[in-house]
Length: 86
Image (tube, rainbow, N blue to C red):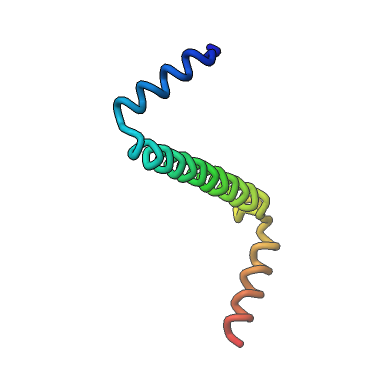
């Protein structure tokens, strides 16, 4: 949908009639601020999503207790209890 020069002039004229010349700059400024806040919020949400995905991956890489062999688990528990005693 392409707007020609005539359509743009008509739209601007209607905006001047509806809001007046003094309110248009304020409306444009608030629209720009809203757009910037929306983009910042989207960027923040994407960063949080990436951090959560990375955290999930790091948890998946860590060995789970059920995956550890009994002797390795016993050695680990012994080592931790000795570290706590000192």
